[in-house]
Image 1 (tube, rainbow, N blue to C red):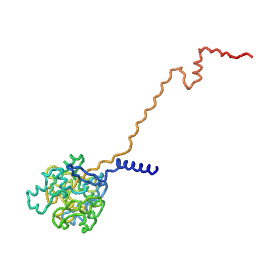
Image 2 (spheres, one colour):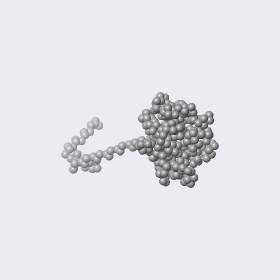
Image 3 (cartoon, helix red, strand yellow):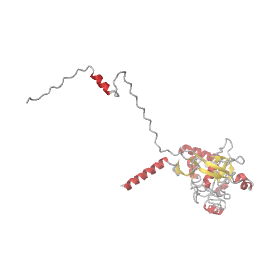
Image 4 (tube, rainbow, N blue to C red):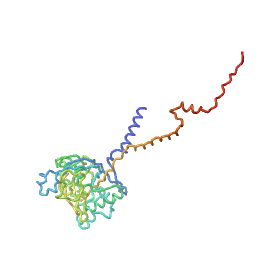
Length: 336
């Protein structure tokens, strides 16, 4: 009986924790037509973003290799797409008649010979406005805030708690188990691979190095980087021509590390994206405070001269005044 009680208690505690604790570790968005988009929880935290200035200055284009080294705080957890957005997911939201690949093929038919598209491949030839439009429509359809990650969120999630060049260490040779790039393409052909075929990073994200490069929701900065510590940095695009940061590298270039970046304003080879959803605030399980009990009402003061409980003798004597004495009881009994 005690064992049954403990089992019931444990189940109750588990339900309480799930209902009022942290956001779920994984979530799935229903995009319609039976298509899902899986995401994994990225915790809040701090990390060092970018590269030391000496390393940056050793490159001809320092703004490409990474931002200046500075501390970044991500104050809120968020869910990030486990995989890059695929054609199937893009079609479900935007429609098959609105396919970036087909638009590119009309302009350059030669790409049909080497490029591929299919439900499980990352959507590519995406322009910044295509990615932003997908997020807007997906938000409306799912009721969630679907968006592109900020550049800081992307690097934070890519590093996944590591401080090395890549999320898998400093040795680029190990990258063949984690990403697709020019010298490590599927079947030796310069084209994308299906998502999720290689190993994920420590936080469960696939293809963070290579395959399709990924847009971030920040304007591409080359000089005006944050100076000193930053909290949830975000540089949203302005109206007009949109140039977004792009991260992760692709199957047409060499292996990109966790800091490498570039700016893109057009639909190009292997330009894809990954989405995030802001995690809901954890619910509290504390019960609301009970309403305060009203103060007891004070009894009205008795009129002057009225008897009170504090003077019982007086009350009884006053009652006895003017009362006729009762006759003494007559003893009844038989005479002896």
